[in-house]
Length: 148
Image (cartoon, rainbow, N blue to C red; front, side, top):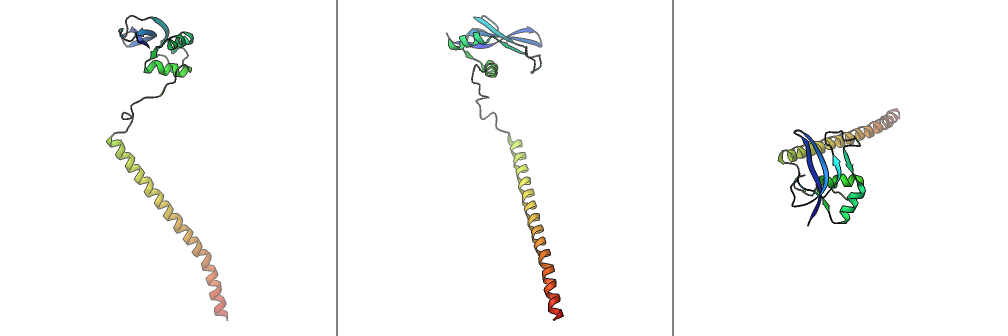
């Protein structure tokens, strides 16, 4: 028998309320379960301490007995430090689409052109500064030459 830590939906239409339960993986989502270990109310604010309530001792016991959490319950347990939760496992889903890739490429090209223009402007400014330093020196030598 494969055990799962999962959500069982309760509450009215458009007013969900979930119980976190231990159930046989073959049992229906809202059907028979073995033990209730907590609750989840998605209508509460994310900062509300009553949004997710889990009995840590029961969760540890069931994990030790071989129960495996679903993605959502694993996220809750990860927040409590009872389970190591890693965000997602589908690298293809996270890739940007064609339009987004084109926008990224255009943005990178604009950034490269802007940096190149800044570098050219900086080089021109440095060159002008060098010429400005050399010009008075050349004028002084030209004046000395005329005086002689």
